Image 1 (tube, rainbow, N blue to C red):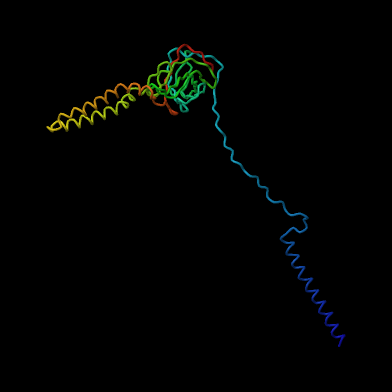
Image 2: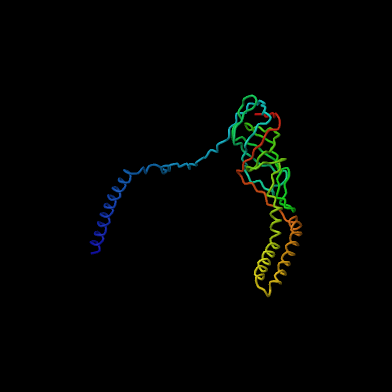
Length: 260
């Protein structure tokens, strides 16, 4: 019996091994058909290079000739400011402008619109007493023709559609406006007492007393009239503030050499 069992187990082991060998062979053939198992390394991964978008900043090109040109005396140019100018602007600070109109030199060279000018705040102060407004004294003294700096001498003629004298741009002077405001209390008191007197006058019993409020109102009005000039002196004028884009007109005060 033991021999029979041993023989059965031996035959069963042999059959299973043969089946297993046949199965492994088929799997191995299929793998070799689709993959290069002989290679010792895997195929390289595709290389990817990140792309970056480069934005080129346009550069202003100038065609500087290296020559000297002459701008004729009296040449007028309209400029537009690139920043705010106010009575708070510090003395000595620079302000930039852009030419709104082109013009020519004596040699016939064209200075185009868009040419850069620069000015200096010579003096400034906020509104002061006596009704004076804020002030800015502006001197436009540089031109950049073809990107080349040249010093110039000009006179400021118009700022924000108003004439300018001695290159001083002034805020609103408010002395008489402040004088009128200072007179308001006396005027209101006088008007009220006059109305009261006119109401009392037709009444026989009190008409004689109507003169009292009228006299009182008159006294207040006269006192206010005397005090108003003094009060107005100690009040201030208006602030000066010219936003970016404000137009100015300058005039060259002599024949001026510029490079470019």
